[in-house]
Length: 201
Ligand SMILES: O=P(O)(O)OP(=O)(O)OP(=O)(O)OC[C@H]1O[C@@H](n2cnc3c(O)ncnc32)[C@H](O)[C@@H]1O
Ligand SMILES: [Mg+2]
Image 1 (cartoon, protein in one colour):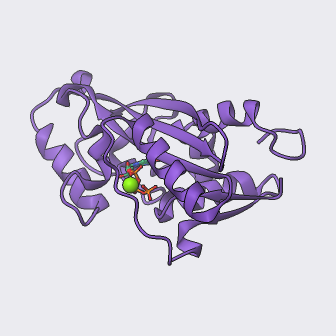
Image 2 (cartoon, rainbow, N blue to C red):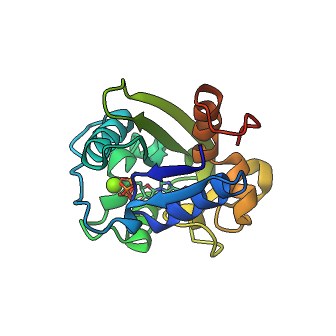
């Protein structure tokens, strides 16, 4: 395999997939390369459902194997919110800093030890005529009271990774890509799929 289609319109995700697959000589195409492909409505109530909805719809439209990523942040003190609504938490325009600000406001006054959270990523692999399969990954952390760092995307500036002593947005991309929920799910996907050179991701 020397090319993979990731069914996402998110530029932050696209960059991460390009870096991870690119380092193994696999070229990544995303829906940013196919502007004619319409948005798929994420009507599911779980990451799994939404990943499958996106992967199945795009594999059908393109007539090829695709990988979709549905991911988000689960904050324990908010009973798992924003969860599947992570992209649209502060509104349909999907504004990363507005979403982050909303989480910070909802956590106002919550003590450090109670600000535990995790990123979750579900990857769905779909191909015409084949059964869709999913792989799930997580990354544990804690929500700070203000943003730190400029790398990454989404909630990265407020997501503190205990073992690293840094937020996701303070980590260089190659470090995030070793420990992230997306990396965790990709490792599982890589074990079950033939990704070409047999050396893994
Ligand atoms: O559906 P696609 O087209 O892939 O793009 P999207 O941005 O709508 O993606 P999701 O529906 O999966 O929503 C995921 C949201 O969760 C957040 N998120 C996911 N992975 C993240 C990461 O690695 N770092 C920070 N935030 C992340 C971020 O706000 C994303 O917009
Ligand atoms: Mg989405």
